Length: 231
Image (tube, rainbow, N blue to C red; front, side, top):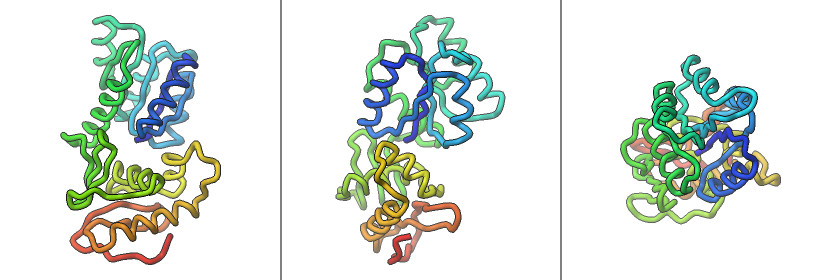
């Protein structure tokens, strides 16, 4: 999942970015409310963690702008303003959840997963595409209920794809979501990893299809032909 963190406390934000990345999230950080809309225009995110006390444009105004524009992005308010009035007002303004500082990382991760799941219409945290399943809690893939053994990079790419099952992801989006902290990864490396994943999914109802000009899409069908090309 790719998360946008809007938080002006540098020490907290640095720790949170690192901690969430270790938990399998891809996190981009901005420290000014004016940068939120710009980031949302440039990148597709799964959720927004929003501090209310942002400089530039405050969190309340950021939230109002999003909802007035019809943006349905799940928003988790993260703030030290822990009062009933504050909670009620932000929820009424369109926030999806509210977590007061200080907080436990495990609770934040669970709330993020639940928000994204609800936004996608799911009722269970396990993601699936036909017989391929992914459990965010255990960070394990299964295929026909059997563990699917993958390299770390294969795992990261397939996780990004199953989180957007049925939607195309371009090579650049995969690079941004999976390898933003690795400078040596090229689009050609994504092609190789997709090729390897196609081999692992060969002879199953799950496959990765190339949509010219759009990218790769993970999908399940009655019969998915094997593909020998890397691209």
